[in-house]
Length: 230
Ligand SMILES: NC(=O)c1ccc[n+]([C@@H]2O[C@H](COP(=O)([O-])OP(=O)(O)OC[C@H]3O[C@@H](n4cnc5c(N)ncnc54)[C@H](OP(=O)(O)O)[C@@H]3O)[C@@H](O)[C@H]2O)c1
Image (cartoon, rainbow, N blue to C red; front, side, top):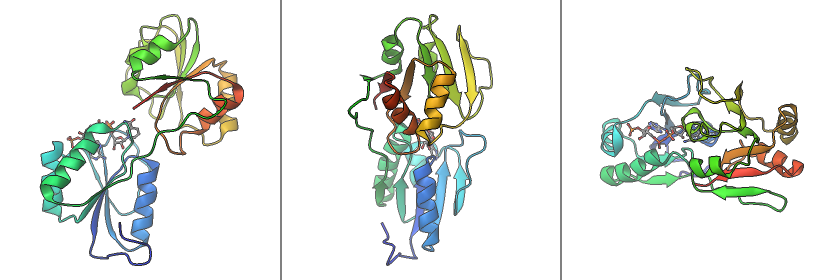
């Protein structure tokens, strides 16, 4: 990485983004006068603005990404994607190998269980659904593409928090949608748990600070968390 003291102004950097950390990195590097392009998959309808250049959409696999890197003359790639976005991270490794470019991996480390955390750690969404007790009232802090595994739990009530509301109705027996971003304040998260009489939280172990407030809130309230690992 170029250092703050001596940024290499000839660098042309592609950040594989879609996270707060990626946006922060773009801001820092643009501030150093570097040529920075952030790439987003294009899943979010109204992505937060990023500094520098922006491109959207898939590349067409590792080969497509390698061809793009060469055609655009990039000198470095930074993988700052979400830790659960595995395909793009694997593609970045292959593409940088093909294009003979350096790759900086800046994906987040997972959260570690702390004293007071009541986590049931599971390896899949299906295991998470099975880990819920009967008649639980569950906050699902998961994206749209991760919900179907919970449809089988017709005994539970699901409060589903999503950034963009779903385009078609969800097939849960009992659910409500909260179209909202997670709060970074544990007290606000705790207030939300109380106002919806939540008994269990289901979360993926994403790491980082942005989504950690709900984990702190659950710890303070002694609320069980079903934590889906990577
Ligand atoms: N997975 C999550 O939980 C999560 C949470 C928050 C944010 N995000 C962000 O959302 C994006 C998509 O996540 P995902 O889990 O669907 O990823 P994924 O399964 O790893 O990627 C699926 C395909 O989407 C395209 N893609 C993914 N990230 C891209 C990027 N930054 N720029 C251009 N194309 C990208 C690639 O298509 P091609 O093969 O055609 O290049 C990739 O093969 C990522 O950028 C990630 O940082 C993901």
